[in-house]
Length: 170
Image (tube, rainbow, N blue to C red; front, side):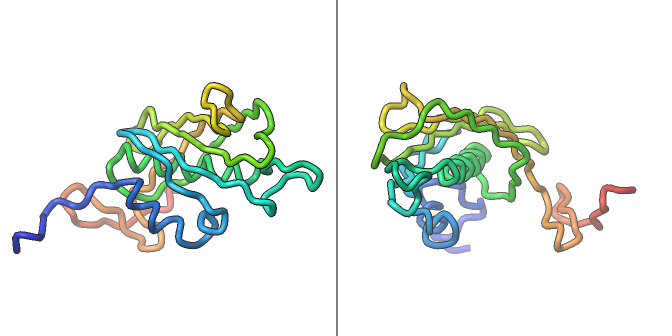
């Protein structure tokens, strides 16, 4: 092994990952931007754009893009907490709107992952338009952590070998 190689896998870093995640796809189209991070939290920005309005006569971001912002921030907070990029699936994401965002304002989503188990991760967060003490919405969510790629039919074991994956119906 050379000096520049390491046997330990790289830890997940939301700032670096956002450079890849936000290049294309849905998050790229929305224009999401990385804002900040901590040990168990991530904050992303959804810039204001006229084509993301909820109502034609009000210059306020629609709720759908805000939900997408919070879902992505949730996933990234989970990976930041786990220090690893592994598949997760949204099981439940509750969004409690407090008020509309201000006209022509970006919205920031700050989400923390406050608990992980063998098969689930729990998040909570706030969407705000510049004042975190005056939130647009609060969220709470549960995500399923996926230990195997079901398309491969194998479940990794602790010794690195693989066993056949069951359907769960056995």
